[in-house]
Length: 392
Ligand SMILES: *[C@@H]1O[C@H](CO)[C@@H](O)[C@H](O)[C@H]1NC(C)=O
Image (cartoon, rainbow, N blue to C red; front, side, top):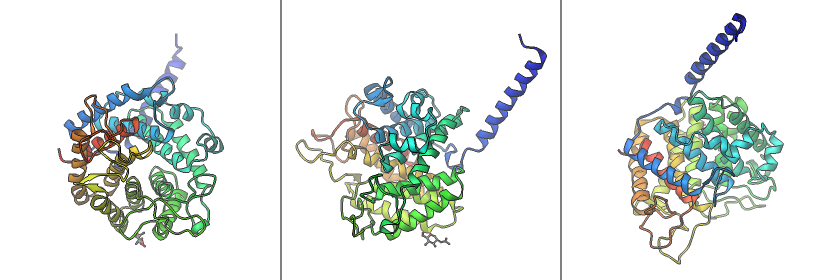
């Protein structure tokens, strides 16, 4: 039985918790506010997510069967992006069950994260994005997200140590320091600018400006407006390697986050992003549908590896984030039909009778589409982005 003293204390605690939640709810960043969503598309997305969980999720190990750490990070981000968009809680236990969530609960140091992430500076940042989206979800539900936010901050701190002057700047792809490439630095632009918007402080904003200046002058974007994979070691020139589709989307979310971080005044940053988005639409498509160079609907042709199977969806997800931060009706209207077309192709061409989504979107599967957790969450991303910004 409580004494009157402890009952007063309990009431005070409960009241201050309730107050803390109110304050938390009010401080949700502007880009996370709920917008109109297309209910029919969300329903399709929920169906795909349910199939993804029942087909691939291993709750004992906390990972997707056939996945990898960085693709799992994206899938976890997608589930939480969907729960926020649809205002549902279907997979609310997945984060804490996940390998990434279990690591987050250990409150590891930067150095411990560096070891666990195997020195992979791009994987590290995909994990940051998953941790942040999970934290957004938990915060929106009034739950404590500190472990996730602290883990993201620790990982970010380790990534900042991977910047040096070789090739004039940039973060190395891995701690082996043999390659400077586009994706690691595009992610660094996004994690830095978004981290600043999340209250990370001036260092984050300085890093975002520095990495954009470096990317812009690096020569990694070719004359067509597309980012090649990376730089030649030693000479630091564009290596002319594949213009993977995810590289053409993550740059846009990063630039829009930098635009928002600068008070939404410098539209040059958005126009720079759209050079690459528009080049993607005109050059990396077939009949207006995204087609990775390794995609082949026919059996026996080229095939995408397990990383490449997720790239197209990442592009759609980061276009969603681009439009979130650009917060501009004209720019939304410009990309809305294309997002709708991708979603339709995923639904009509990409999805099998069990509702698993395959890797090929541009044509009906004739045996060449690959069905995996990566291709499924990639399709899921197309549905989620279209639910928010496609036609309805
Ligand atoms: C806007 O961004 C561009 C591209 O990074 C930059 O060159 C320019 O100096 C910026 N303008 C202002 C007013 O900050």
